[in-house]
Image 1 (tube, rainbow, N blue to C red):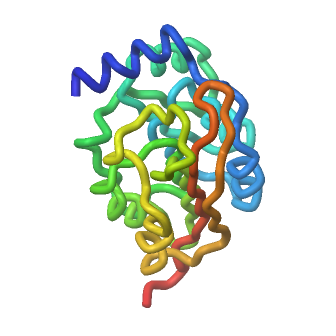
Image 2: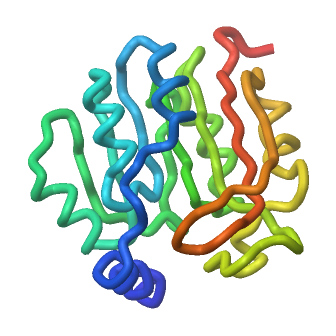
Image 3: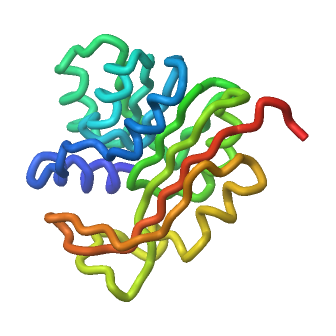
Length: 190
């Protein structure tokens, strides 16, 4: 945990990622009535700020105390930022109308993501994939999705609204394969 925390603290101090939110997040979040939202690996809070502006009450969590301190210092209403180790974190069942998981992959968290959604709640998930075209993606294969892996994880639990795998271009890292998915938990199980 401490090694991960220091790695991300260093990154946020020396080379913070861009703060432009993904269009995917705002466009789908607007389709929901505001409620409780969870922003996993929130970083400096680019998506938490969007959700709070839309009326959501946001639990923003990240391992980096540098990122969390930055977000807390903004004192934005509706955002509750806290430092947590996502390798050890569980999400209480039926807690959130919306869960975001952007640019983070910890496979053991998948069951908690699905259970943490309220009936009718939405998951917006986007992260990087393994691929030969990747240029400088700052992750190991353990932290990269395989083709269709995200879709296969989510199909048994969610009604899929959007899915795509594509080459993303980012100024910091060059191009890299990414996968994104938006799904809703059924109102009634079964």
